[in-house]
Amino acid sequence: MSSNTYEKKKNVKNGVKRMLFAVFSLLLEIVFIVLLFTELNAYAEWIDGCTRLIALLTVLGIYSQNKTSSMKTPWIILILIFPVLGLCMYVLVGFNGTTYKMKKRYEEIDHVLVPELDRRKDNDLAKELSLDYPSMAGVSTYLSDCCGYPLYNDTDIEYYAQAQDGLAAQKEELKKAENFIFMEYHAIEDAEAFHGILDILEEKVKEGVEVRVFYDDMGSIGFINTDFVKRLEAKGIKARVFNPFTIGLNIFYNNRDHRKITVIDGKVGFTGGYNIADEYFNITHPYGYWKDTGVKLTGGAVRSLTVLFLEMWNSVRADDEDDAYFDKYLPAFSHRPVEKAYVQPYGDNPMDDEQCGENVYISIAEQARKYVWFITPYLILTDEMIHAFGLAAKRGVDVRIITPGIPDKKLVYSVTRSYYNTLTRNGVKVYEYTPGFCHCKMCVSDDIVATNGTINLDYRSLYHHFENGCMYAGCQAVLDTKNDFDEIIAVSKDVTAMYRNGQKASNNILQFLLRLFAPLM
Image 1 (tube, one colour):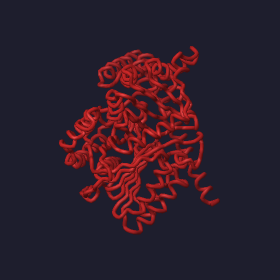
Image 2: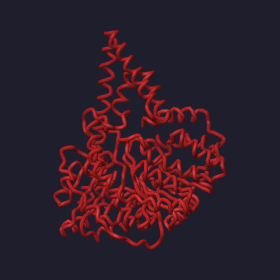
Image 3: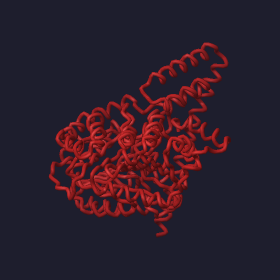
Image 4: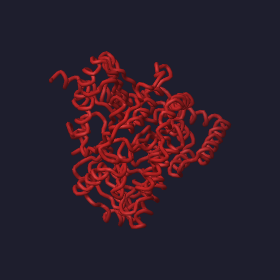
């Protein structure tokens, strides 16, 4: 026990050191570039003129982009006021990550994988949905036709109101694996929760099951040591790291893999808000009680989760040995669901201009007739979302948003609260989860449709990260999600009236300044 505790502390300590060193190195790069250009500008007027011209052209380019004004305005202001600093920051974090090489690899793998999903598109099923739930037909069509993710009716979906229940179910299904296991998570902690999974994965490898583990370097940087991949591979587990945080200019570092996916034999899949780290399962309590949720899919819809995993696994690096064939990971099988359910998993990524996650949330709010409720750990909204939520409330829809009572990031929490006044003045009700930190990312509407996945109501999820979600309609899981919302609201504080009347002017100035530059965070 003492050895494990020591190793855990050592790994976390080393991970934190690496993160601090990487951040410090990045800051040094910014300072160096700013000083270099500033000093040069002081000695040569033509350099200063060129800098300002480049800044102006960059501003015009940003203004012409097909993006929401909420994303463009902060960059325009920063570059116009501080040309050198603004340009440096924009080069480092302003791009959406569509570097030529990464985008090319992504397009190449999608060229092979997307047809695997196209074969599942069923026009008759879409018509059936439009008859059963007309309000959802448009959202489903958007996901299918514009984002490429088909609708399924051959899938059972089970909702887990607690992350620890989802983890327990996940471990039981992992034990049944016969062919392959895929696990993709934003954060993995080399600690108790993952060790329970690792024991199972080791046994499965010995049985001949192919096991792959994929995680985001930034998400896991404070949880694991740099030799984590080597230790997994020594056990026969294939492992890859997404977008390692390295020293040097890297305009892709701002885009992280925030997805949470487990696929077993292509027949059973899990997704939701939780990573594989102790705090998500209340083994540790850094921010009070941690509230997180997830769903289990059994049936055809797992195919979409498999494609999402393979897409990321094969796009991460050009020098990796990637898959040549995918048939064995996309088995054709028949599953008879226990109940009738419409299930539609989907992904979102910063490599295109389609804000799939944001558009799903907005569309559900626009189609709501009685109520639409959201829960998110971070609330940093675009103008479009504020308008959609406010308009739904003005139509008489019961619009509610639940945020944490205990924040994990105080600066972001201040930005979150800066949106309360605008929302509540337009009729939206806001609650704060008093037991602790709510990390789940869900919505539910009219007892008809719900979503569960990784997509927060903030700029990072909606515009910068690789994300995934699952929309489900007309099934018990929707009602289970609604019941969980009822329980969450019962232990949350209604702060609507408090923020409808506004806050102190000093607080507003600070919050609105942070809010202005929230898209840059």
